[in-house]
Length: 363
Image 1: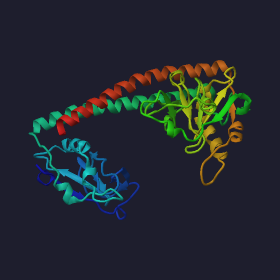
Image 2: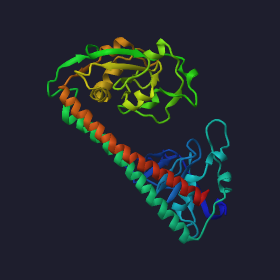
Image 3: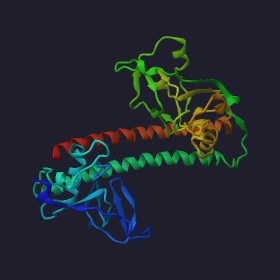
Image 4: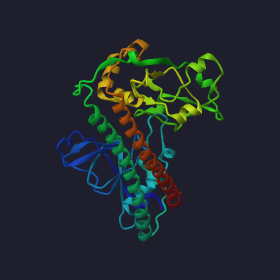
């Protein structure tokens, strides 16, 4: 069957006349909720599809809502098509195939109505929806678990050290330069060494996040054997800080990354600390705290293009709690990361299962 046989398309309208921050009904655009309104266009259990912009991001809405003029509402004929079945079909469908422009992605109502959809009997639809609902629930649960563990570590940091801004424990404050044993930035030109079968890794800003360094999508390289390469090769426990885009994003080099061999480019700085005074993981979380972020912003060297130099980094100030306490915090982070790894593996398996079933049901 075609969409024209089993659903209606509700055009969105400008929300200005009905917009009210205390309104009863959400206002949806192609990217999600944009505000609230005193009236609605679409009933509950409608699928939102972008008319312009995010055209490959279907949203299932289980309450009445107003859709703006850049979003369509797909209203299933419930006697033959379950709304949630329609939603999962849309999640699997590539609406980019129907894109009618070369600039801003755009869909037309006429093209949407020509889409072919397999519509089995209602019992089969309900079974498919039930299976996918359970998998999506488990995926959401795993994602929440990962988020909660991240929040737990941040809370533990405050619990152990207090708010860095107020320093309630009166810890000594010193400049980072007093505890740096080695400081370097990466060099340009690493791209020419990036190859599919490279034996080592190339770390970019994208790999540095939440005080860790992810090996996901790490670029493989064959690094040259010269002084410059040796200078930018990282070691276990090194602190990497972004010095251009997204200033102050910080991560600690793990043993796995160091043993594999990894290098940085000019957008990152590598800091080797005196570990008899500072634990790198403690410093990373301090730098990622609001107190650390404020320092990075205040030391930004340009109003046009973000940037930090060595003087700026050396002058960063931080609290220096007892090393034993820092090590306890780092051990807590390590234990939490083990839990996160197990959850992440479970999440990846669920994502693979979901993709496989979506292909089975709708491919």
